[in-house]
Length: 110
Length: 455
Image (cartoon, rainbow over all chains, first blue to last red; front, top):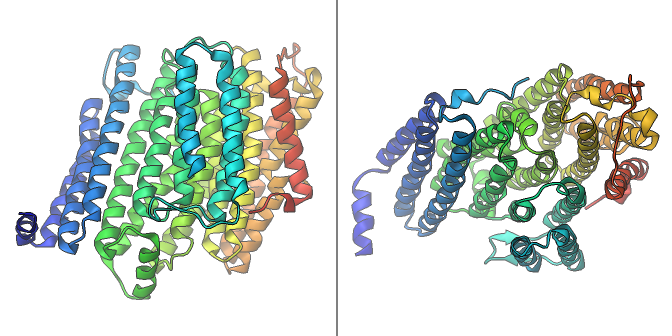
């Protein structure tokens, strides 16, 4: 069973996984940089993390080494913790300015 | 191990104390626990100590930095007694979050596996996102928290990508294996490895606020509560630098990465010092001063010889002492000025509080790097180190920038020694007075006898 999954992953060449991950990562980066809605920004951060997960899984299958897969679980855990904190900060911001637009955050300057 | 467990449990104990309303006990219990952790580290000083199946190595390097981190946290807790005296709710949470953040700091000073590096940085950062937003009703605090959160997570994403690429190239997360791989490449190219190093260094450079990854630091320093700002500019910076050196210190870096480090150093030195010149808000000034100091510390990195850890250790230790003292003085002056943070608030400090003004002067002079203070010895050692390794031009540039830097520290000193129109009404709690004096005396003592602070 397990071996089956690894063979299935290896059907696609490693470069394709690399390109796909980079693409997803870039979409995430672009989203964080260009979108103004904080909820979309949070989603794009998730996208960045998960594209790395994909990359790690592919590498793991190609190196026949389970450690990267364990790391993927850690990343999921950390991502969950981060989103929890991020949403809490977002709620605080919504209460203060009644908006989720990042352009509202402009009072710290110098 | 025992110290890590102790501090984690301590955090939970503080949360329970807060739950049952023992506000007076929070800081004392925290301080006693931290001192116990300090003793744990000091007691088994020379033992190689591998934890978690070798993922973490508490060698002399890690222990020394851990002890500095703990001492600085104790100083901040002493400050916290007065700082949180008027706050009614969520005090226990703030102390506990600082302890949890400290755990992350201890992990990244001692990692020997990249998984721990990532986890440590996240354990260090996630409590800080919350702490930065500690004043719930303050707009500025919320803005600081949000900016720190988004940019911090963004940097974590790059760090992760870097780690994944390093893994893809070396098939291992262990630091020794990666160092061996770096050495085996030699002058050849391994694109995956190179990209991995780039992204990982970018992720860590964000934490130490090196240009061009510094955008968060002025805003977050200004918006966050002062105690948290002090925590960020001392504990977090020290831990992040310890981790940075641990990551690249023994690695044979490819030429491109080395060039990137030099560029980063020069840009950081330039931008930090030049932009600091036109700051009028004290916290922003400290933020840019912190970026400038990052530049000097990066300069020590370029050398990579046996003395570098010692130089870093001394620099970070003395920088942390001076910064803690200054932020306490700022809090006192800010209270007297009803929340204003302009450097004018120090006006008349010498008239009303001579001793405090003198200590403030000593701390600022130490940051500026004037002889007889610890900051001078620290900068001198960095310059000697980088000269010995042949970075003549970069060092010359750094010396010029250090001279430029003196200006903005002296402006604050001038404010403190100018008589104000009306007397400055400072209320100095005895504990705060003690911590400030301690920092001031330590900075001079370490400047005269640099041998006192070594690994």
